[in-house]
Each structure stands twice: as C-alpha cells, then as structure tokens.
Image 1 (tube, protein in one colour):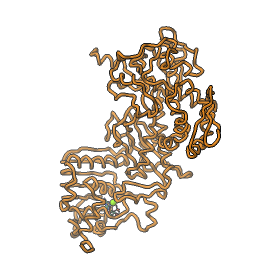
Image 2 (cartoon, rainbow, N blue to C red; image 1 turned 60 degrees about the vertical axis):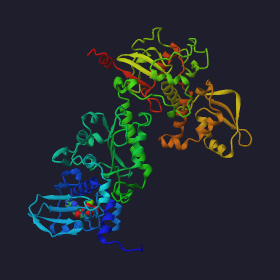
Image 3 (cartoon, helix red, strand yellow; image 1 turned 180 degrees about the vertical axis):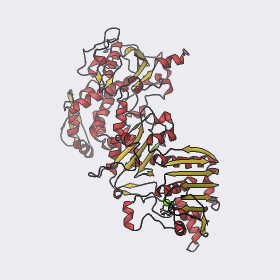
Image 4 (cartoon, rainbow, N blue to C red; image 1 turned 30 degrees about the vertical axis):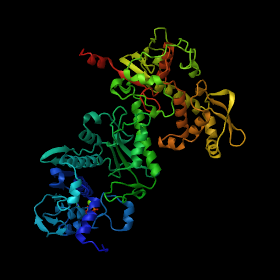
Length: 637
Ligand code: ADP
Ligand code: MG
C-alpha cells in the first residue's frame, strides 16, 4: 500500500484511542474537567457500565455559550496559553483534547451555564460532527452526557470486559478523585442505583470510610501533619509546603502493619492533587514497611504529594496518569520518611496484645520460607513445622547445658549475657522485675516458657493467652538490635580467629571489598592485604564466631561487600543491610533443639528488644492466641 494521509475522522479515532481506552477513561476526563472548573459537587451516572451512558454533572464555573464549540475542538483549552505554561501546570487538564477525543468515538452532549448568566446553552457532537448551539434551561455548572461510547469502534468494544467490570473501573476512578478532593461532594449512580457518595466535608478520613469502610479506615494512621490539617476548609488543597527548602510536602493516611492487602491495588497517589501511577511512590511506601510486612503483603495508602509544579513534568502520558519528578530521589525520600515515621509510631504503641500479631499460626502461610533467607541454611527439621508438633524423627534432646552437639546454640551466642538467667526455675517472672521493664515505651508482657514445638517455635504463656515465638526470627532480632547498638557506639565486638584465614580474590572482587573495608571493620571484621589480590581475615563479628560455618569466608565477604544495590533497594544503608545479614546468619535456625533454659533465655532477651513483634526481614517473631480466641475456638462463648 502506498503511503496516504488518513482521513480526518479515522485519524481522530486513532488519536482518541490514546486518551479513551474504556468508559472509566471518559469518566476520568470529565471528572477532571469538573474539578478544574472549581466544582463543589460532582455527580456521575452510568448505564450499562458506561457504554450506554456516562453523564457527569458539576456545579463549577460553566462555559459561556459562545465557547461551547471551542470546547470540542482539539487542542483547545482555557488552561494553558503558551509552551512555558507547561512548566507550571496547576490544573488537571491542559492538553485540550479530552472532549475532542471522546466526541470522536461517541455521541456527546455538552450543556452549561456560567453562574453569572441567566440562560444556559447546549451543543451536541456526534462521531466528530458538530451540531448547533441551542439555548437550554440548565442549572449553573456543566453537564456532559456521553452516549453509545465505542459504538463505531468495534475493535475497541471487543476488548472491554463485562458491565460489572467496567462499572467497577469507573467507580474506582471516582473513588480516587474523592480521596484527592475531600472537600468535593461526589456521587456515583449506576443503573439507577446510588453506589457511592461522599459528604464533601473536607476530611480525608470521611472519604476513607466511604471508600474502604469504617473497619479499614480505623486501621489507618495519618502521616505527620495530616491530622491537624484534615478537616480544615480546603485541605489538603493548600498544604503548608515548605517554601524555603522547596521540599515536597507529604500528607495522607497509611495502614497499620496489622492491616494489609494481598495486592498493590490499594495504594493511591496524588501529586499536586493529580491521581497518578508512580513506581517511585509505590516503592517509597512499600519500603517504608520494610521489616514490618511479610512479602506478598501490601499496605493501603493514600498519599498526597505537593511540590512546586516546576519540579514536575505532568505531560508524559496521554491520559496524564504518570508524572516525572525532576528530583526523583528527593520525592522518594520524603514519602518514605513520612510513611515510615507514621508506621513505626503505630508499631510502638503500648497496647502489646494488639500490636503483637494475633493471627493464629495455622491460618498463616508457613512462616519460614528459605526464599526470604536465601543464604541461611535451613536444616531439615524445618519441614516438620507444618504438622504443628514435633515429628517422631526429632533428634534426641541434647543435654541441658546446650553443649552436647553442634546443633544447639551455645550460650556464648549471647555475648555478655551468659550467667544472667534471671528466671526462677518455673519460668515465671515476678512482675516489677527486669521483664517488666519499659523498652522503647513498650510495656512487655511476662512470658512463661511452655516448651518448643517442631524444634522451631517456642510456646509461651503470657497475660492474655498463648504467645508463639519463631526462634530464628526472635534470635535474629535480638542479635541485630545488639549489633546496631554496638555499631552506633563504634563498639562492635569482634572475635579473633584462632588461625587467620586467607581469602583469594580476583582483582575485581578485591576492588569491591576494598571499597568497603572500613565499613567491614566497623561491623567487626579485621582484614588486611596479603599479597596480590588476596586478603587475610584475622577477626569476625563476634556473633558469627562460635558458629559452624556453612558458607566459606570468601563468599561471605563478597556477599556483604557487594550488597550496595540490594541495600538501596530495601531503603537501607550498606551498614544496616550488612548487620541484618550477619544477624540472620548468626541466629539459631529453625530445626535446632533448644534446652528449656535456652528457650527461657531467648524469650527473656526477646522481651528486651524494642520491635519484638517482627524480625528484620519483616516476618513476625511472635504470634498471639488470645484467651478470648481460645474460648471462641472451644465454644465456651
Ligand atoms: P483540557 O481539560 O485539557 O483543557 P478538555 O478537552 O478536557 O481539555 O476541555 C476543553 C475546555 O473545555 C477546557 O479547557 C475548559 O475550558 C472547558 N471545559 C470542559 N469541561 C468543562 C466543565 N465541566 N466546566 C467548565 N469548563 C469545561
Ligand atoms: Mg480536560
């Protein structure tokens, strides 16, 4: 086929495809126009999932009769005038092609009356053919009715899903805008039934309730500064942006770690009140939950970022659902920090029995997956965990002093803690003694050790029922906390090797280690050059010293030294990542039999940590089965 210019209507339909993908895209453009027009109330009606009819009615500023035809013209907009305006976009629309695109693939009626006029007007455009402007008796504001969407584009129709699905997409869209504009009253009517409404009281919390229900809304916490602003007129449209530093302002709500979803579909992001999809922002939020949520679990979040429009490119996507940040890292860091602060604050709330995870173990997926600890050796005893109780094949219990064989963690794994077994023989602790201490503002329950299950879990009794502890996760948490403290005080304990070890490296590997040699020293390694590219290791972090080493020292060094990218991807510094890695390797494994005394010691030390409900990889260290849950299970009430 020779090259030919496409007929204008064909070209228009192709161009429309970029903007109008499905009924929800039409809803999006119309709702954005209503918001740009300063509407305080936006009503959306749908018939047949939007394919029959989409009508958006607003009480905004309206369009004068003589401008109605222009509204339909491609690249006609009242929102920007010159190219330079693109650098400071303050409205949701600016491309001037939404109405034109919609009218290319549907029958559109536009009727409007500016508030100051007594009469309104209306204009129809059908498949790209413009009608005449006629007077119309309409309320102040604008009403756009879209009928027979895609009726002439069967290729597009084919790709649409069921009515329910399309209605769902459209509804979700309105919900997003409702979250971004709590001061606007929204309502959605589908097939004649009201399916969504917000009061427009200016409070984001109210919209959260409307969108997610009270149960979830109550599980959400405001980001710092949001609560005071929530409820103020116009909030969050006029957040007090830090003018001097030009730093992004971040407000919103995020879920407590105890409340989560299995998909990322519950993360809502608004940048200067534009609803956007953003990997940077999703990443920032998910990273903020690092070590507080298991993998595969995702938070619920509504995050509003406000920043100088000059630091933003909103014109990178035809449907304007993506933005580019000029200072990507700054935005990432601001969001991550804001969310992390809010989430950590909830994790430290004093209500231990609530903050301790209370999903019964058998309702959760197997808590120890080797994929989360790619480097930890998980002994075979691990498999027995699924049965709930120790298997018949459990190795014989070693002697109580814990030195009978290499499987038992010797007490020196708790450096500086040996000989400090405060618990009386029966394991009960007297309230008021050490276990009652306040650590990080958290009142810790006194736990009585009942025994070990499946060589992996320690079962204890506390003030309200049974607390089951994952021995590996718990020990890892204990060691990590101790190492972090020592590291901060520049006093990480090292253990000299009886025989210094030589490590042969390639030139490239040597470079990687050299780059981190100071940092490696700070976490307890003693390393010196040893001819060519080889190194001599004289000492290890003390926690690793007593350990039988499944991993050659060379691999360990390279793994630790080369983990910059991995650390960054977890939002950690190299040191934090390395310490967590060392703690994981040094911690007792699942499948290791512990003597009663070792079990008590472990629990006592766990009580002394500050974030005792989750290990550094985010798996819970503890599962709580409350007395009332037990009573329910046994039909006692
Ligand atoms: P854009 O939003 O990018 O400017 P549109 O095609 O969506 O382009 O709209 C074209 C113009 O029509 C807008 O710039 C605005 O002036 C006017 N307009 C559209 N919808 C409304 C509305 N609901 N209320 C007031 N004016 C509107
Ligand atoms: Mg628009």
